[in-house]
Length: 43
Image (tube, rainbow, N blue to C red; front, side):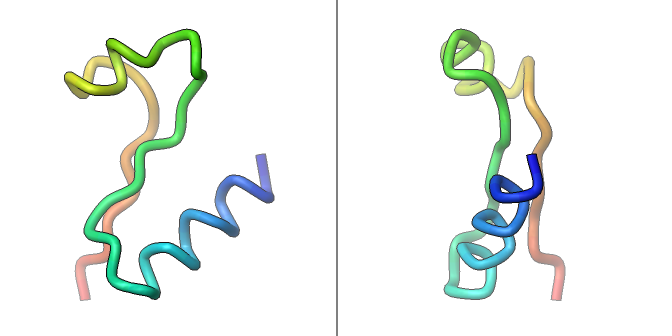
């Protein structure tokens, strides 16, 4: 899980507006914000 978070923060630092971390098996739910953890950069 730590590598996923590290990569999420690197993406946010490079201009990505939000990252959703979740299981690939839940892809449909991730797309509609029904699963996963959303990380955003609010600065």
